[in-house]
Length: 404
Ligand code: PMP
Image (tube, rainbow, N blue to C red; front, side, top):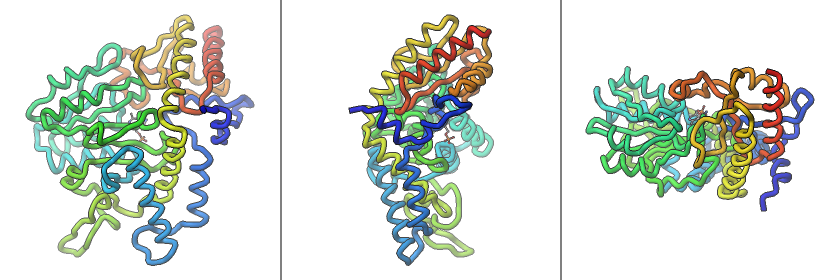
């Protein structure tokens, strides 16, 4: 049974007040709040198991190593990967994409080769490829989006050529909530022997993902968007790719042996994990994933869909309010504008009512430009939000409309 009152008690921050009003936190696509079990895990690790991992002979180092590697296994199981060696800890989605862009292009791309992204990507799935345009001479091609903010797999079929080396696309748009047809896109790319990277930063927290069923070649996400701590994220890569691509950074932990003449690298996944890993972050991420699994992603999705439907209905009924993106199949994100009210003004005024939303381009400037606007107000819902909070948002917007 979904007991929202009990669930909210797991998130201490939700009971705080801002400007002497109850906090209504609707900025979950930017980052999620943390359940107590995650914060407790961080404290427990620092208070009783803190020691550097992997190279210690002593008790605490072994205990921390065991926790860290058990967390890798939790991530593996959470996304259905074949082996823990396919799970690389990074600082987040951004670093994971930079890692693939750098190492994949170095190994597989020659000047003139092409990488396909889409018109709705977050900057972190645009800029790393642009850097590679300069470094490796590749060309980034952009799959166009429809007026409704969707991708058409047939366009991908047309765009793939003998020069295409990789397709890198987001599963869910952080601005519009569009759920992309990645199954079909992976099938099309694979028919041309082209591997696919999925940016799952906005999807792992909302729907069950199984990388083996999806058959994606790489998948990346950030811990902080799935109720885990900041500063850690995941790169999943099929072993056959991770084996072939070179290390991203050099240093301790990622080596087998070092001499001034030659260094050999550690086995997977350590080849990609230079330096002391965030073993506190990994264990707290595992606590978050266990929490999410305990609630059940299917129940989370059902509840968030209910919230989305309710919010869409309430907002659609506000005169002059326009919602951007697909109307049907989408994730629990609503990007909107109200006639005559700048998105920034709307955000600031909602804030005075204790309502936290995001405004602007949401790190997806090309998408915002494609929509012919300068920015939106974005309300994004998580498993702990309530219909009462959506009422607060809708009533807040109505008050603001009256002020203008
Ligand atoms: N991709 C998408 C779709 C995102 O929403 C985000 C975060 N807004 C990122 C990538 C980047 O994630 P991070 O900043 O945690 O690296």
